[in-house]
Amino acid sequence: MDVQPITSMKYKVSCGTKTYVVDLNAKICLCREFDLDLISCAHAAAAISKSKHSLFSVSSYYTTETLREIYSGEVMPILHPDEWSVPVEVKSRQVLTPPQPTQAGHPRTSRIESCR
Ligand SMILES: [Zn+2]
Image (cartoon, rainbow, N blue to C red; front, side, top):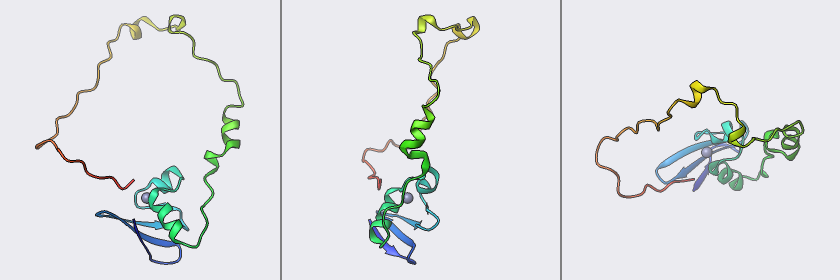
C-alpha cells in the first residue's frame, strides 16, 4: 500500500486502484471497517505504521475483561434436539434456500485481487 500523509493524523492510502482516507484522530477510514468494527483496518494499520504514532488500543468491546463480564452470568447449554420443545406449526414448515439471483453478463473467469 502507498501511504501519503495529508496531515500528521490524516493519510491517503492507495491500494491498487482504490484510495482510502484514514483519519487516525477520529479513528475512521473510507472502507468503514475502522469506525464500524472499532478495529484498525489494513489501511489504518498502514497509516499507523507510516506515522510516528504507536498502535491504538482496541475498543473495550474486545478486551478480556469485557469477554469475562459477558460470560460471567449463567449460560445454559443447548440440549439435544430430541429434548427441544418445538411447536407443531414450526416443525411442519419446510425451509428452503433463498432463490439465487442470476448475475447479468458473462461470468467472471479471472480473480480480482483484494486489498485486504
Ligand atoms: Zn480501511
